[in-house]
Length: 132
Image (cartoon, helix red, strand yellow):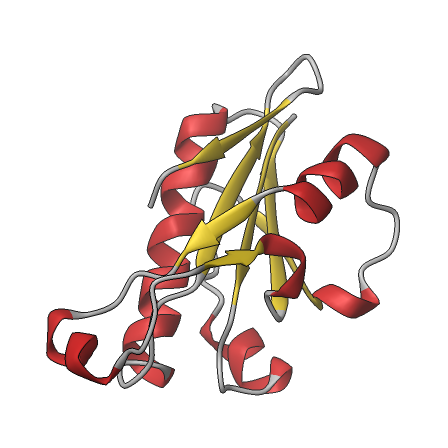
């Protein structure tokens, strides 16, 4: 099964975000949770969340407002959006998930840095971090 996770920040509520999830795109199934409430994550994924960091994507119009470009631990991002499809490739699921996260950012968070991590789960169960 192809599976991927987008971890991101947003000022939108979980209910608002749930309304933005696409339907009927490659038969993807989505699950949106707040990171602090996430359950049933396997140990390898938890290790990535606890150990890896991202750098904010700062729109050029906001760079003058940002005091630092320090990295952020992935575990501090507010939401986890999981997408899966038993017949798609990991790359396809990652692409759809990235597009969905971009739509959410465009609607709710344009005046903020884009904090996002995309993690794909390979067929062998290993994980890869995809660059935005």
